[in-house]
Length: 609
Image (cartoon, rainbow, N blue to C red; front, side, top):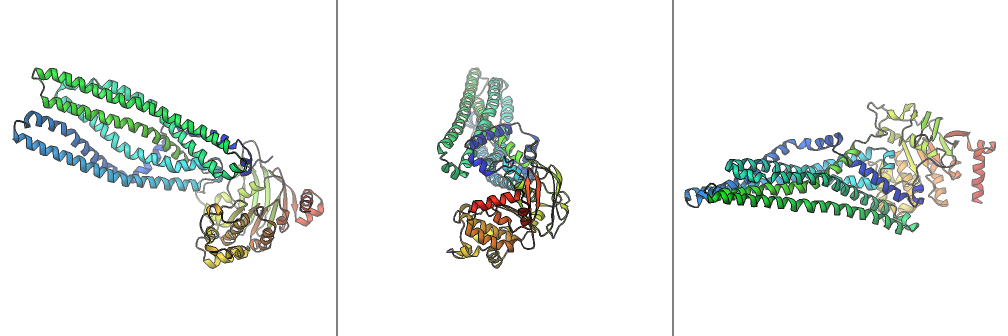
């Protein structure tokens, strides 16, 4: 049984998709915890370039809040003094006009500045996240699905932007209004202020309940939203397998399940929201009623003026309106904090194959590969390569054969440093590959599989992928070296032909030939072919076989193939079993010895009959 994870196994398992979604549920919930140090560091790093701007914006918000707070006092002066004295009325009206203009200008400045800052932060975070996803190892991407990655890059990033900008506006205005209105009411009439303060305790209790309830509810909404995205993307990514195995009803059932959970989470959150908003409004109106009753009683005795009562009503309304905004922000805050946790968890992810701090320079490579006591396992306690020792001289073509799970592909991935061994070392020209930076290793070692990705764009762009600076003549020469130029030149646009999504306009064989041309152009010292001809038909395979002499000349080659026609061109064959080399020699020698390779060769010949 194979211990190497394969896409084919996932496709053939009808319950793999549902198990994957359940894993997403578990991992998304694990991420929904309190704001941790990594999240604070990420937030600080995003805000740091904009510190001065944010300080200026705080000043703008303070000016806006001050202008709002002064209006009720001006209204009181107009009602109490201005109606009988024009010398007071017109200056007060002028001051009110100035206050209103300050509010308007401050709001315009704030919105324009926050729009610029918010989009800059959004761009910065997306760049950081994109670079991080590219740097993380193949092992990380094997366990982190594309749906989760899309969720991190889109909705979670936008939620973080809302946290930065809405928080600055809502929280500061609410704090200034609460403190300013309370202080001014005390200065106007302490008795009415005490009556107004009676509404504060129930309001604080309601806000406390809402904060706790919404924390759970909106985090669940965020989690379920991510799961819906994950399920949809995973289904669409594997749509060919879904339709081939007629799994549409099962996929629909899974999506129905996660969509219903998402709906229920939203309903619960809206139910909490529906209780909090009317509750805040009711407490605010009740406070106004109490102030009007008390103010009316005091006014009858001539102890409170009409203008003071009007100012109190305006201040109470001014006090409770930000509370409603703050309650709405709490829902945004919970979603944003959850999103920030998920994004920061990716940013803090340890790279299993990180670049060394002091890389060794290797400008030119001969291509000698050595496995020095390598132990490797995908799953702890299940060894794939137990203490492998292997030497491949520079320029030698070596074929790896053996049953599924023997460790062939694992050897290829370790040479390309998609993984690092638990113990031992893999060396290139005597240098541990862990001591080479990624750019150096990728320049000298290339892994070509049967599933090489063809990007949207022209055929020339795909061939030029490993060497973007290559000229058109060099691209044509690379295609000619593998025999790909024939079908390319027969196309209407030749090398400028658009390949379509994932190379959909090319056949499987044509896609593989383009991938071969890409390798020739990159010109690595070590070339690994992992089942690289398995998707080719017999005529195309023969064409590639003829070109392999050109492709492999002057470089070290490791060939993994079940079709022994490819193995026959090797200088040396290694037969693997349970991660160990059990036979080693030239193809003709191993056939003559009558061992395992001879049996495999005989079985292959029989399959051709």
